[in-house]
Amino acid sequence: MCDHTNDSKGKQLDRRSFVKLGAAGVAVAGAIGAGIGSTANAASDLYAPPENPALPPSDMLLDSKRAALVVTDPQVDFLSPNGVTWGVVGESVKEHNTVENIGKLFAAAKQQDMVVAVSPHYYYPSDKGWMFEGALEKLMHKIGMFNRNSPYSMDGFDDSGADFMPEYKQHILDGKTIITSPHKVYGPEANDLVLQLRKNRVDQVILAGMSANLCVEAHLRELLEQGFEVAVVKDATAAAKIPEGDGYHAALINFRYIANAVWTTEEAIKYMAA
Image (cartoon, one colour):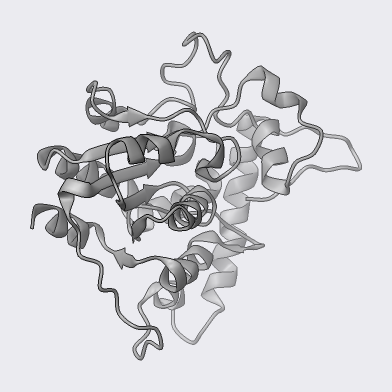
């Protein structure tokens, strides 16, 4: 995603206008993607594993007794057609079957009685006073992404962009799932995710959620630095496609470089049950 604000006219983006602009961004990005390579499926070819990889294969062996499923931002604003970012992430979400795959991971982890943690993204009115921000932070605040009225009240939360996807609530709100304090930019440095995992004697993480090159990658990097073994589920995430680039492709390259393993949803579920 990028800042589409027209500075010359001082226009402010709202949720509805961003969805419209985002759709245009998808069209432009799609045209760019179609021009890469000599075939119509150039975009999907970009995501395929290399035929002759230079990096060594993963040797991660999952132990469900010391592992957790961690899902970042399983929220309406990222994963629903009603969400403010759907215009730029929707194509990727549909392409990778992200909503359904995250749901499958939740169900499989619960079936195995694994630790499950959700790291949500919320903005409160006090967060609007930040004196400096990166490009995407500026945009998220302008379009009201993940807005909540107060850290002490749930008024207006149900069915808002900050709310969890309805199909996940049976798993998230079961009284067992860890719902961390919110992360404020991309990574978990500002919330209690690492503390919660340590307190549950977790040192392996299956990582999924939104979005690939932002919160998922930032969580991956921090968890690795904290000494966790991390497998990213590549088809249980997605990212924006805009003229500045395909966020999913950017993240996938880094997942291959730095994660302990990169799995599909099917593979992750198989390893959970082993």
